[in-house]
Length: 221
Length: 221
Image (cartoon, rainbow over all chains, first blue to last red; front, side, top):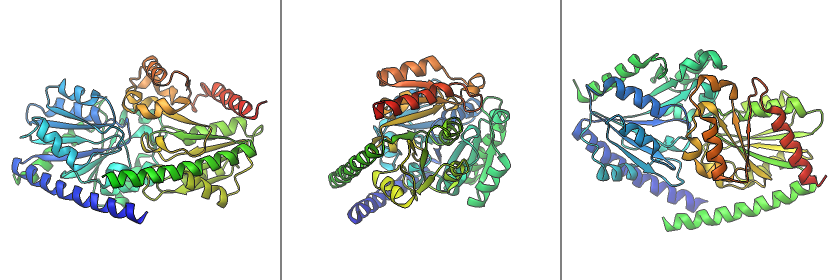
């Protein structure tokens, strides 16, 4: 096992070098890069569709989609006129920095104002991989249950922003929103929590303002 | 990378030996062992609570819970008077056969008629690990979206049974049930699909009959 651990450590260190190079590249183009992480079906692609619908006239978006199989998510984004590249991991449970480099070489994604990287649907494995992003965003849909931040503390403590999605379904499911906010805040006191519904539009203004604010901060404007 | 792959292969082969030993042990006690796999929040623990509520007078149940953190799920099962052992993986994204062996040594779970192993909430990583189970059960909640069997084909092609959960929420979410059934059937022509709601009780009779039938088949009665 020690051998495996050492090889993993080396692989992780190499991956971090690639992430640092990506971060330099994104600084040059002034691109805000966001790494979206959640369980399968928490509404990552739907939130991106909603965001593009609101802001595409003001900002240039690009999207890298990570999935085990199918081009479905990239197709959904391309249908909105936004450049998107699908990374198919085969069986792997997360994206890594080299896949992001390869995506940028293959597809015409930069320059862009905001690059979304939609990670593979998985609340555990993508947590420790740096993709050169400005910050990680964790999504949690209300239908997944209010115990998830307690049960998957790593991602909720590392994500600068937690987006609670599918708020329109709150009347139909047991979900203690205050308890979730309290748990996420205790895991990550400097983090931000936004509650949204792509169906009703609840919280989407706040979410868009957050993106614009972070982009302005990055560009020092 | 070749070195990593070889070490992984050896680890997987060792794990398979442990699984084979577990399978012998379960054959001796006549225990039906089911490995439940799904995204976080698909309703695995809730389905177990519902099942125990229906069948605890007729059958002896035991549960092994796998989670990254917290004893919450085991506590929920113990509250029903059913022996449960919580395996905490730290950061690992799936259970392995050695953890099941250790759980059986530590906790007083056998003999039992049905042992449920609730895997870590993850639709990818647990798929390839044999825990000595009779078969794998994939859960998919309707709130996760009808594209999931296409996007995560490995688990849906390997699970002998797919349980579609939270059917009570169908009126509130876009989810093409027929398309999902068709996809799962094409991935796994010999598999069984059950649609349930632990909230309304829909499909729970069918689910319980399936468990009883599989237990009887295993015991040749």
